[in-house]
Length: 241
Ligand code: PGA
Image (cartoon, rainbow, N blue to C red; front, side, top):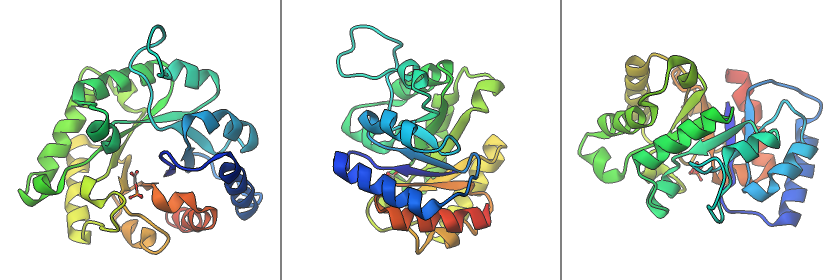
């Protein structure tokens, strides 16, 4: 899957323009289970109404609780009731900027799966951890904590996005050997092949990144904000996966 993460970007007019341009660029094609967009939550309903159902929609975050006195939060049950397909959980910007530790992430994963959403679990190490040669251990620890207590059926509804923190929004991408090592290690350890890469993916490097067979797709921040670049990335993506 190729997933756009707009983060906290775009006002209403910009969303309208992006939708118009992107729909024009996609044309009539229909490719199930390959494309998802995660806009800020307040645009989700509009995108659900204006995009065809083969394009999945996701939230960037969700609550760990079902309902109640949690001012400002949005539950996965609410998202599901609007036909939203998935949610990101544990993005490093939430872990670092909003104090979400592995326990909070695990509670959100469980709640989202319970609500019937697919979960895109985001994991990734800091530069310090990478330089200490502990990246795979660190990332495996994040995954183990998030998956603890989930049965295989629940786990099958999780996609894991490996996003090294030092590669997000920086223009830096791990070297091909670093990516190969990480994704082979993850696949050996977890035995399934739903791993995405995220961190400075764009139309110029996506084909090279996807030359690593263990990478099933990409989570794209900055480059997804431009309709023409993201449509071009999708074109390259579906040629390869
Ligand atoms: P980036 O962000 O593509 O702008 O590096 C990726 C992400 O944070 O998901």
